[in-house]
Length: 569
Image (spheres, rainbow, N blue to C red):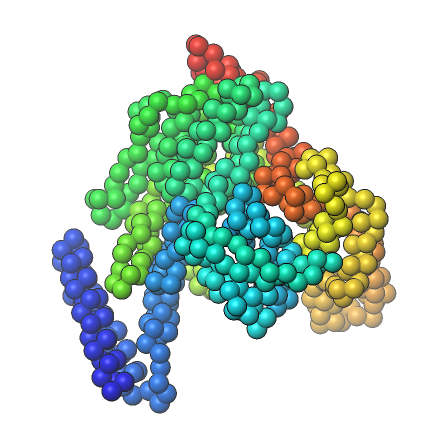
């Protein structure tokens, strides 16, 4: 009976697959029709054969999930299959919206821990804090090693419904139950906007979800009309991209109507499109600096690359990620979806910034290689400056990312910074709420960090020790062990991790990270960004660009919105 049900379901699924492909073939060259139907039939027969003859009873969904994943892995990492259970994840990526309590949770040492709460949403209003440990959700125990995805599904739900959450608050809070109403949660794309000085505005855009262009526009108008902004720093660092149309609309805020912003080209004519500025710009004459780094990708690169191509902004920071591929989401059978790469995009100068060639040769580990330097072409900006394709967006002014010690990296990876910030924040009462910019951790709290690490049994190694072990093997192989023994022992002693020494050596950066985490507890993501601006070398360098250097780089006089408009060379 079980096999009969399987065969019926299998036949239906097979018919859906084949029917769908038959429809697609009407739009494909006839030469590929036979190959597609042939391999679909092979897949169907193998799948059926496994189910009929394999010694155990396999699970159809698991088998097909593995097959689909392996197939898509041969393409690019942006072509992704979404089963029905993950459709909400896809919707959140596109809109930034979901129904839930407004909290980010993650498992730490087997405990479901609140990592962040979103300002103005039910979790924050109910008093839930970062560091709280979730014990149960609506009676479902979370002490049996549930993963974060399972917990996330329990917390999500229809707006207006309620969920009972049992939490354990460390450092004196104890166990408590909180009834939290769910709401439509929208994580803002503009995490923070404000003034860096009397004339310079700053906007941090974290993603390109639906409505992000409107958020940037509102921030622009507010800074200009209420705060007297004369020039702007737009921060796209860490922004992995999102919706293409939002990136076009954001560029349109700064360039005249009719300006070509980006074009796309695919193997099908329907993907060969040109996107132009359709509206009246909000800040056409505003001097502009855009910040990027190695995590700025896709839509971030459309914005920064096109503004660079048009000589409309000075780009400051580090070379961007290099993702020049466009995805489209397609409905599949049984309420599943496929996000598939359909085209490449080209910025205003005509360059494609895609770094990796997923259709070319792979390295020994099967990873795509970067496009060969010999195949790269050079394009020109509106003012005649050379820009290169295939390497992401290269900044006009490069600023190195501040050094992060191995110790701090390990402290973050093992959540020691997060956990100790929770402990420090618990010791601050309502009268001690730190100012997001001026807060400085007390010396006693800093000294307590070492005690905390000792209590946690924190241990770490470094890359230097790993390389020393390799060097020791080479020394022994070449039979220099005798003459080099004392030198090797002295080097090992110098490089051996020493928590007392290293906490002192890297005190400044570790204290800074701890202070930012404490600020996050009271002022949320916007407060953390506001604080980071005071010590950010890339922002400091951006401020120095306005004026003479901006004119030197892109021929912009820094008029700040005069009636005559920008002065172009």
